[in-house]
Length: 68
Image (tube, rainbow, N blue to C red; front, side, top):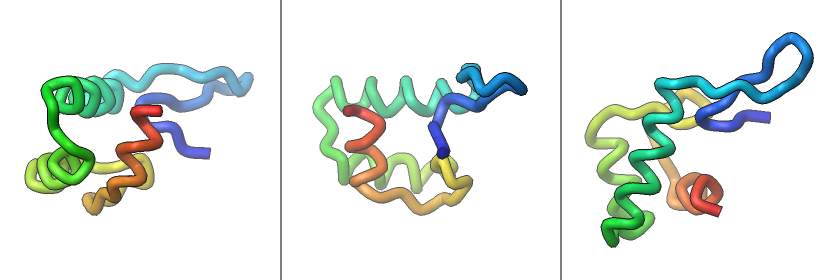
């Protein structure tokens, strides 16, 4: 399973990936500032931010899953 902001160590424990955690914090901040899922998606794509699958194309459902 892919978790944006996390990886697993050799024992299977979740470990924070600092660079990806910045993306998650950005998504939360934009949402709290009133941006819609579509606006956040467009913002991330415009800035070339990679999603959890390491692709530059985001889906609103990706953002919804991160926020929930």
